[in-house]
Length: 52
Image (tube, rainbow, N blue to C red; front, top):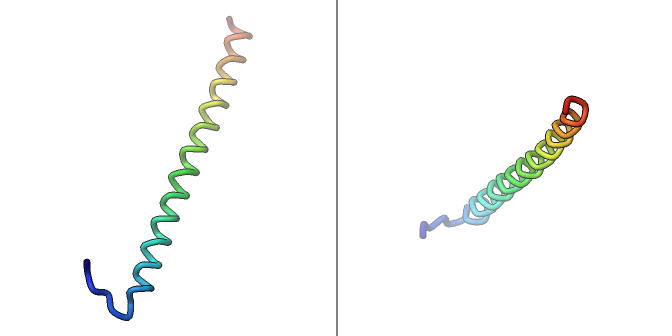
């Protein structure tokens, strides 16, 4: 592993914060995609009832 010296805590903290933010963005994207998919399925079901 690389020797970071006196900057180790800042570098590790930055990596941790970046990884946490990326994880949150991925989780939010997955959650939103599922929500949109459900909404689309509801709209399509309503259209089938009226046009079916």
